[in-house]
Image 1 (tube, rainbow, N blue to C red):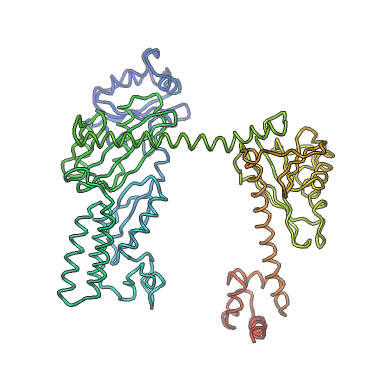
Image 2: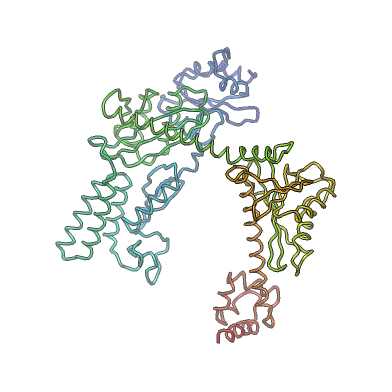
Length: 600
């Protein structure tokens, strides 16, 4: 305990509030709340025998702390949630990657609202729904929503004619006056109801509008509304009725060696409308009720919608959280721990889903480990290497009949690609003549030609047979690198040639070691081909423009930067060409005439 901490402990108040623990660098490492600050904070600095390991480790790093007094425990809870969100302290239980959770935003403040994905909630008159943990699933859901309700997706309303989205029936083209604003706003309201899970209200709205359109002899509008109604009913059929009525969030929690998962079921108007799972970190040594309480505070501090009931698997500051949620919603929110009946069954179902997710996650991590470090260990065994080949570098050569010869170097660490360490080389020694052996000597010289090499790999892989391997070994061994193993990977049968061995090593056909070698070889090939194509396209562009009188390197570069492609340069008029920086009228006329003659 530091002198500063000892002095502040003697001055602690009996009031409720929040305490903020800091380390020697002044960084916030923990935020907590207390009904009585004096009692709660002093507990941390009593005998450490009763503290779990996490608390002992945290207390050892506390160099200072601050307290903020509040008028009630509810205010302390709100402040605690906001400070955890702001500082993301290391020792607090927290949602993993909670900053990245997306929301669905309906821009109701605009004349013709749009449905977009956002990661920030603003006070801009829009309606927000979420957060959602899986952005991929969210995008798929929005594709379905776009088919049900073809709202505009573009930002620009100043157009002369509808775009492709209108013609493929994914937009009603309000920008071109194809849909009235009143009808469009009705559709936007239906979208909001649908996102809230109130499909029955959406059905009633669409049916009423359809009947009104039919009565007014607007049969085309009535037919569109009929199709929307059918689609919504078809989607609603897949949703099971789980309670009589009302909006509920059902919380289930599970803990295994794979982590801590909280599952949230969304029940709207008595129907299960969806679910989201959230992984938590920092709670390995915490009690279940503390974990659940921390989740509820972080989740509902940013939730876009609050239900009438929150169903929990067990007690966890339920009373104070209920008061807090009621204040946020502006109407009564009940936090319930059901003991029997249908509500208890739904909570158990949420818990089972959380356990199932952790089980699947553990299986996925096991499979991933087998494909990465497991494959690295397998490769060490099959090649008889002394050291684990944790860092592997693989080289490949790419060219067309010796032109634009390039080489690639890709890096795998622990069986996973490390793209930040990739390198590409433009080969100069073989320009105009195909010579893979000489090219390999050049690239290995540029990478390993010095005695001291940064990030020396544990294994060097040469894409090729004995010839390419010999070329690489000549340079690598000549530079004094005698310890690093070098192998060649033959393309035809995927045999591995080892230095000093006449017979290749043949990996088992379904081994993870073979799959790892295939991945690193394919990645080196892809990276080399991509660079080769880029150089070839650049060469082709240069060769065409260089044939035009008055066009040198500077004007060529200016044209390409302005138009972006050769096709756009060909299609440009003389005035457009003349407007490009560094171009003159004579040069613009020369470019225009050059391509005009070619067209004829």
